[in-house]
Image (cartoon, rainbow, N blue to C red):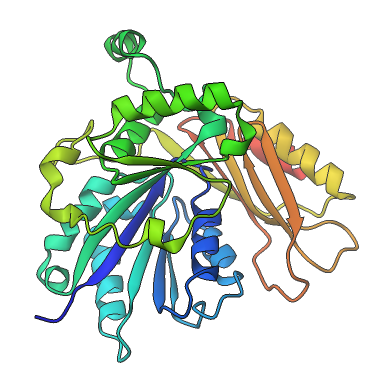
Length: 334
């Protein structure tokens, strides 16, 4: 039987650093032909453009596929299966495929899709790599409580962020602790110990400052689709689920006077109750290149893109259901 194409599922909560890790992976691919499926929550894409701009030889036309129809775990039949078929039907066989899921996606339904007839004999889930934001954990923006505190939280209310995060951890074959250079070493060691108590036995936890060798991420040989029973989180195998606890908004703001003014706008939006993430492209008056905006928690990163980059000037705001969309528009409008 023809060898199946290994597929790495790259998951992790909003702003964890999945795209940064993916760009670094492609730049170190050493000629291997790697196709990428990038999934976004909401109606507008952004991460796909960052991957396309990586400058690596593997970023050829058609190698990057962006899905913006909602979380991939909810659109398997409509989006994932047809996309996989197109990639697997290429004249030149692929060496690997990487799926970067939305930060709100659950990996389990995606793994089940590898049993579909169009996929099961031609591709395998080589492994689930869950990227965890060390800074977010240290600041309490993503819950990682001790057992007693967790039991009390579970008994009193449902936390949609906690549920998504724990489902992503439950599915992991490898945990990448990103932004580990931004956390005190003692606190980082404590976080690793807590993570180790949450994941399945023998799951490695590695630290990252934004890059890891491809051999760490590809070649796990987990065949994860054959081991779904041990990867059940809050949503049991086959259970229906939705993302009604979260919402997104696409805004096209007017240019800011300066880069600092744009940063202040993003900070005001990010400070609104329920807002979790702001990302996209915006403009600064008089500058030929768009500004790449990446913001989560207390961290706001702005950088000018290439002047020839033709990207839609819009910002995507992701937050808990019911966040004040009008206030977010006003904040980003300055």
